[in-house]
Image (tube, rainbow, N blue to C red; front, side, top):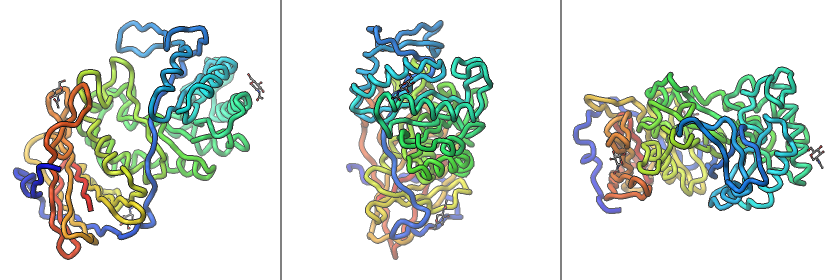
Length: 437
Ligand SMILES: *[C@@H]1O[C@H](CO)[C@@H](O)[C@H](O)[C@H]1NC(C)=O
Ligand SMILES: *[C@@H]1O[C@H](CO)[C@@H](O)[C@H](O)[C@H]1NC(C)=O
Ligand SMILES: *[C@@H]1O[C@H](CO)[C@@H](O)[C@H](O)[C@H]1NC(C)=O
């Protein structure tokens, strides 16, 4: 907690706009509040076959180190390795190749070896399966075909495992033509086998990038809107909705993915999806040697990690979050609650800043009970800043050490006086502020 600064000192050089925003922080969670986030990842793809006799964790060949393998096999040691992960693990098993006994033998090993198992996926992004995949049996691969296949595989796998509450169902990329709304309607009794309903979401695609849109507060609201019905469908079935795979752009990311703007996207996207009713998000960490959106590499940190870290700071030990704004502008404000009382406020100015004079938004919060509050700032030189290009973001003035992820530097905590229950904060374009109430 060293380095306390008055807020004005950190605003030197900023142009503060005259118009400001005012939000009352409700003393208890308002009706549009929601719950909190959990968990962590690991997975295999739908190109993988289990080989009980293999002594290697995974076996594959690729033409160049950045390529994803078209086929691979994995042995028992892959599952032993996954079993050592300290967080919960979702393991993806193959359905596309239509070898159910192979998948069941892998599932039995997973069940017996992995105390950290959260759930098992039966197939990855089946909306991309085609009539020439073995599972399709020569017929066209429709939503109805996939739903029937998912349910029958859940029956067979869980019957052999004598297990319920274990399948991560759906695993659809996007919401059309296959959706959790459709799948949940056909699950029937097999819903007992389901642990969670799973979506994959990538707002942008390789070669078609728009960073301002990615990080834009109202653009994020529009982008996730189709998933609201998916989360609601899962809730109707009494199961959590998760994003089992998500990140900024498909295929390992690129262009926009290593930037600070992508960090700001993570921050606001996490808040908005949690509010929508999503239980957990698993950020895809790409292919070995080709991972523009990765949070860290072997030698260098990535800018997106700063957004993930700040989102965790905002949500840690909290029960609920509430949107104070209506999600139709560039300026976000959230109240964060613990045991029914506001503990933090998160302010995010999603105006896109890449050069010249940096504009700023003024937020006035009312309904505050203490005489002063502190704040920590997430910032970077530009929305386009990349760690690997020497433009490091900071969290309360600190950076993460390349190679180890250890936070370093002197922490800068801003102090703001509250008068009459009201305090004013400036948040520059492409910046966020976490206020400790
Ligand atoms: C076990 O899986 C097979 C498919 O390999 C299936 O035919 C059988 O019904 C399953 N057993 C149980 C008890 O569900
Ligand atoms: C949430 O409710 C608050 C009132 O407490 C309202 O001002 C705000 O616009 C709402 N936001 C959304 C996204 O529903
Ligand atoms: C991390 O390494 C990159 C080079 O890949 C460098 O540009 C950046 O400044 C380093 N960041 C820190 C915090 O030392």
